[in-house]
Image (cartoon, rainbow over all chains, first blue to last red):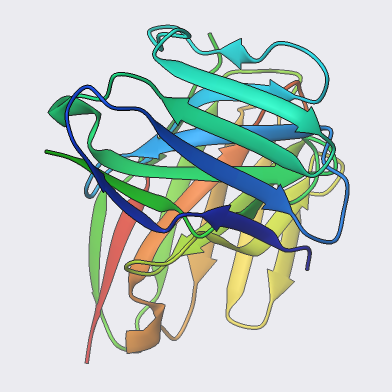
Length: 115
Length: 110
């Protein structure tokens, strides 16, 4: 299957700083990528849909100024957690697919800890 | 908005028994129903999927059924093995986005 690479896998940052997470599709072009947040022992909560060359579509309740998404190319989407706080600590995971009616390929996830 | 409900949240079975996980979806536009398995600390991986023009699909010990009229779909695992222990997610896609169920934590006791 296709490969989606996410970086970094783990990051610890101080409160008030910003953290950037990258999601790359290595062997296919993904016009659409998705960003999820996963709390311990819980499901994948869709945060936003990232569209190449246009603004991301955020789910209800997700602050777009807090979670900045940039999809500058067909193989790269970035999620920036701005002014991070301890409650932002979580597991963030991206996925990409050719279309919404095909398999989603997930990155390996990023565990963010804000201290 | 669109919603996918998944039951049960936790399932414990004895090795060799069958396990069934059920999902319902709300978006009539959905036409693609994948199932993902997530092992601890790893990314979700597709294990089987079904499209709306098919009622049932089987792959060795895993089968999925779809009732599009009732908007129900289910995952069946037969002859469970300890390595089947993981979290399983159903999803409904085909519209603008894919919506995931809440997940089922499956424990297979040896």
